[in-house]
Image (cartoon, rainbow, N blue to C red; front, side, top):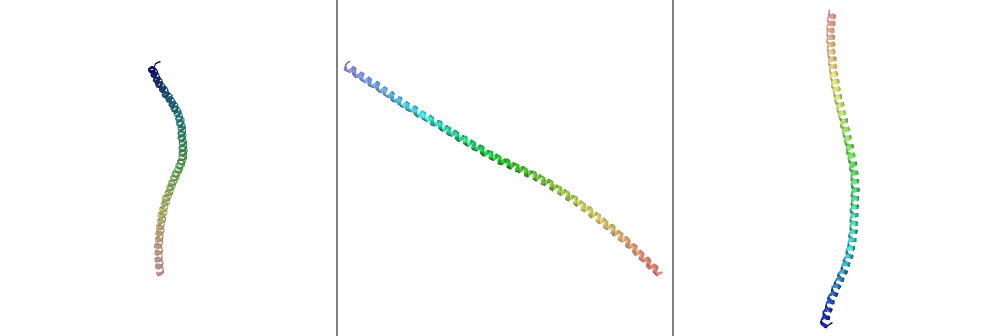
Amino acid sequence: MDKDTKKQFDSLTKIIEKGFNKAAKKADVDKRFDKAEKRMDGKIEDLAIIVNKGFEDARKDRNERFAKVDERFDKVEAEINEIKEDTHQIKVEVKQIWNKLDEIEKRLDKLSQTSKEDVDAIIGDVLNLKQRVDFLESQIKELEAA
């Protein structure tokens, strides 16, 4: 081989070596990227598990709180219904009291009317008796004078 050919051959060899070195470096970089990607995938999976657990815990906590709120609302609703029933019963009893009061007032009016009629009748009888006594007294005076 002559010098020029050898020089060209060496030059070609260096170019090929550089290409292989670059390819090797690229392969090494690719391997590192693959490792980093696998680590990242693992971390993303771990993060997904943590986030999912957080959502499950939040969901569980929310469900427990809503259950407690529902329980309190049920108690309040039961108390309101009890108050409504008591109020209704009170209204019924008050209406009965008013009816009894009306009945008592009617009886008092009747009794008052009856008492007035009785008094009027007694007064009439007393006046009648007084007239008779006066008549009898006048007749006794006439008989005594005679």
